[in-house]
Amino acid sequence: APSGPAAPSGPAAPSGPHPAATPPPRPARPRLGAARVALVVVLALVAGLVGGFAGDRLSGTTAEDAPVEADLPAAPDGGEGTDLSRPAGSVAAIAADVLPSVVSLEVSGGGGAGSTGSGFVLREDGYVLTNAHVVSAGDDGGAVTVVLSDGSEHPGEVVGLTTDYDLAVVKIDVDGLTPLVLGDSDDVVVGDQVLAVGAPLGLDSTVTTGIVSALHRPVQAGDQSSTAFIDAIQTDAAINPGNSGGPLVDADGEVVGINSAIAQAPGALQATGSIGLGFAIPANQARTTAEQLIETGQATYPVIGVLLDTTYTGEGVKVSEDPQQGNAPVTSGGPADLAGVRAGDVILAIDGRPVSRSDELIVAIRARQPGDAVTLRVRSGEEERDVRVVLQESDGE
Image (tube, rainbow, N blue to C red; front, side, top):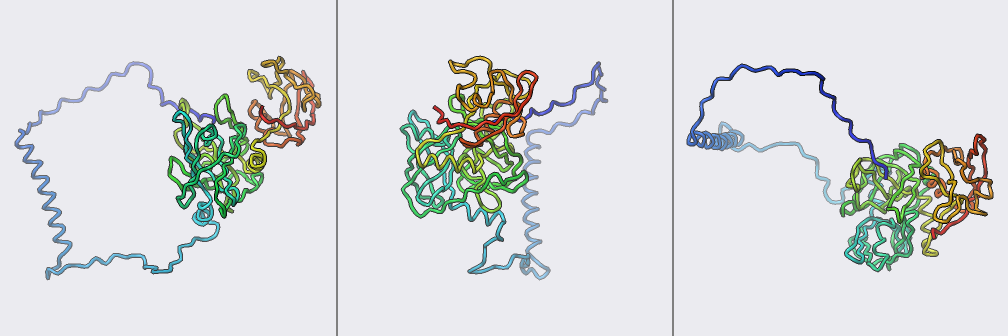
């Protein structure tokens, strides 16, 4: 996740020598002996006790030495059957609807590896959606335990996961669960109220609130061997380690994102807590990927069939001029090749949205589906043109 700006330095000291003013000498203060110091301390303690006793006597007696009853205002007792419900649409009402469908996951793997995270019920027959990085250790000979909101624990089986989108589906042998609704993340706008629900730092059933603070943030999660490119929803709802895989829900209680990453301060080796910049995988992407994982155990993603020059620093994103690891800069017969894109071309925009970094172009493509058509603004030398590219499918192999 991107690092935030470093804290500004303080004002510089004025230049040139400035001699310090010398204060007048102070008169010597008499020193108390140890016995007198002890006496002062004892007296202070006794004075405090006496004062407290006197205050108690004064507040508890009248002229007739009768006790005075405190008559402080108190809220009326609602008694049995008091209605503790909250208005529809309130944070409390949304939380009450969502929490029963949110789970926590405990994962153990070989060699002592393990992790904890969050998830939510996807289908009533026991399918749960979470992040791939939450359960990856359990998918490699480890064990996954799913803890439901009622505290019951169930062994989970990883049905499938994809590190390309950082999503995974886990199955437990339980029926009759209440799934959450996957909303339309394309309808989300900056400023929308959202709730993040999960088990940050192992504290299950935790709810935090905020707004959608940005859209289409290109976020890379994971390490070099398994990097997920996310066209993320950014939120200032507090997200901490352990929130991963939990739902980001809107004011209707529908899931608009899957909480997956948090920004870290400059110089930090790992994210340690919320700094007001959290990122969620859009629900529309999660829906498509989850369906693929349930049906086949694998997920695909769209490609245009080019290698990008990550050393390029000019305007737009440059297609590599040279092969990389034996692969041609433009895949023969691939979408870009068929559209007339050539090695060394510069891609300036996708569907009218300018791109200036490789990851911006990658996440914009992966937010689509294989078979979708996109329009690329391409520059070859001094000439600019629009080309229509039909995305092909890759399984990440």
